[in-house]
Length: 272
Image 1 (cartoon, rainbow, N blue to C red):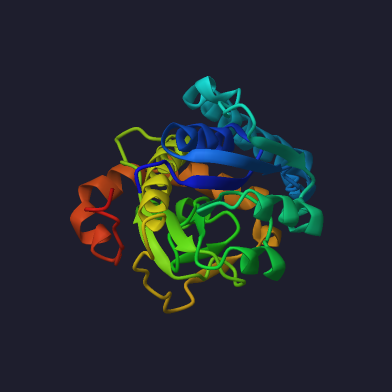
Image 2: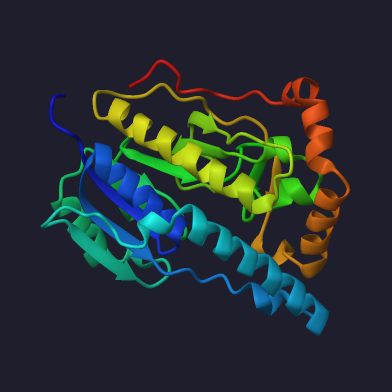
């Protein structure tokens, strides 16, 4: 294929999602972007004023880190004529929105950060939807899948999974994993931002390859650890920061080979 593949992107509204769109615009013909507003309200999980302060501090730090890392992506770099829709949570499933997506006749559909996508949307683009799941499937699934490895003292499980979308929860066949570099002195948001950068690059390379023909994918085997939004708590936030203060990152780096050996990761290497 000599022309850039036509891509529709279903994503959300944070800077990390705008980073994904803008990087895709550099290499794909992005003909439509649907951004769902986020529905997660972490302060509703606070039980005391201290809980509220600790949760707020964590998310303020995340937002500041993303603002610094992805500052150049405050504005979307869409081509003239591209469809751009900002919609309510789960709005991508609305029949009118799905019809508008189909009308663009995309070669690939890239997903990152939306709510659960339903049957009609998925069936509209068979074999053409690549999801970017922040978390290493099948090891961590569900919500907060790069938060919980750090709560559990397992930074080696921070990463992302690019997989074909199906109707399960992050359960589709895996095209590739991605991980960012872990460095001495890192905090949680350093790891998160580098993971996003690595994962977006892999997703776009996978999209370029998929536009030329079906991509090999590995079915997910084993349930891993499943976390729901209701599992989130201020106590988990505090445990995460206690782990960093206690030397979790250096401990991992000192035993990197052994600890990485616990992972069976899939790579997109040698593809465009």
